[in-house]
Length: 90
Image 1 (spheres, rainbow, N blue to C red):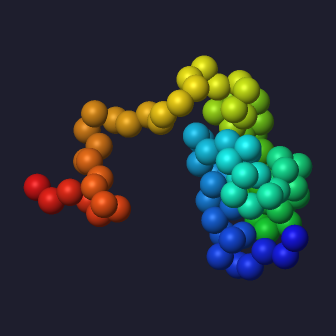
Image 2: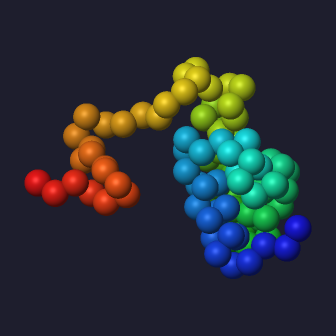
């Protein structure tokens, strides 16, 4: 699969997010976990890649089967509500 720069940037962003699973990346872009790891290794500086690997290795939220919650997402009570893809006005 050939990915353009925008897709690669989005995959990297999703891989850094704590609550975005590798399964979600696979569903959206068709890349398995190992392929995401290879992409991260190829696209990032060695130190950044090492920091990312240490961060995600063994993290429960990166794998759907290891999560303690099934649906939904965490939302802080202080987070502004979003309606129609724009932040609600005060």
